[in-house]
Length: 83
Image 1 (tube, rainbow, N blue to C red):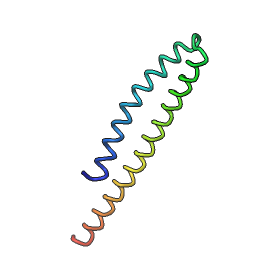
Image 2 (cartoon, helix red, strand yellow; image 1 turned 120 degrees about the horizontal axis):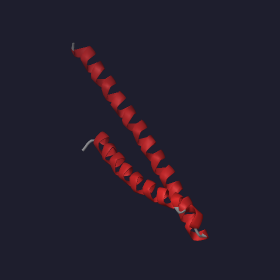
Image 3 (cartoon, rainbow, N blue to C red; image 1 turned 60 degrees about the horizontal axis):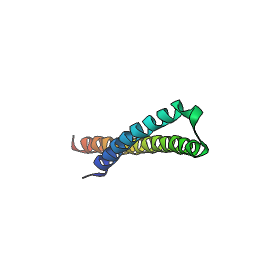
């Protein structure tokens, strides 16, 4: 399996995780008024986790874009020399 496929699979797994964490954050937000000190820390943790996952997805998107760009450049270079 090439690096692009691995990154794409990782990205999809992170998107699924992001959906789950987003649901938890939404529930936490709805229950915000009744949170205890411990609950508040969980709310902060889940929000932080959501941001971290979003950042990871953005980083993976950047890497995938650079790999695809490099592949296109290589293909264009090969076509230039072969055709």
